[in-house]
View 1 (cartoon, rainbow, N blue to C red):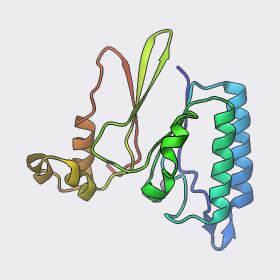
View 2: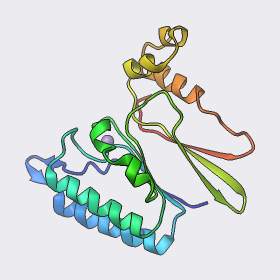
View 3: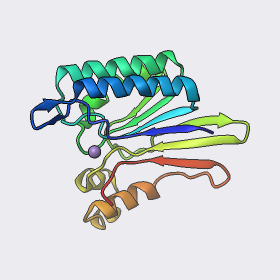
View 4: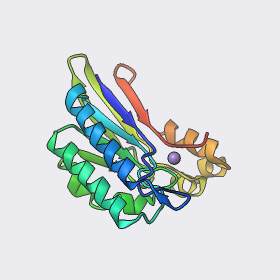
Length: 179
Ligand SMILES: [Mn+2]
């Protein structure tokens, strides 16, 4: 199975007041062309879609346009939040978009979030782990497990331990963490 991994688009980023908008628009167009040429089975967007929790309007338009093009190409897309994103804002409309093959894991909610793909060798489980903070994971974990979570490492360890891995299938984890 062919997966295209992207991350850290940081749309809306400015370097010393210089907007990267034109460069980002250009590279997203090149990525769409590459997807047309290489025909991946899935596109992974592993966090930091935006540079800021409240991105500039032009960055939102840019990403919206990018997602529309991917949906038109009928390539499944998996998106997780990064530390720069607002998980809730990023996943606006997520339930509606999943019908178009665009899958978001914005906020951690204690539940496994995965997309199952299939090829001639069987199933590929793509687990989507949004950027998570220890306090959020503690909130969803049972009391005993929560008491053990004191930092990012413990939080991710706990969240990953909750995934139901199928040992006889291929399992892919999409994450964006400091661990
Ligand atoms: Mn980043």
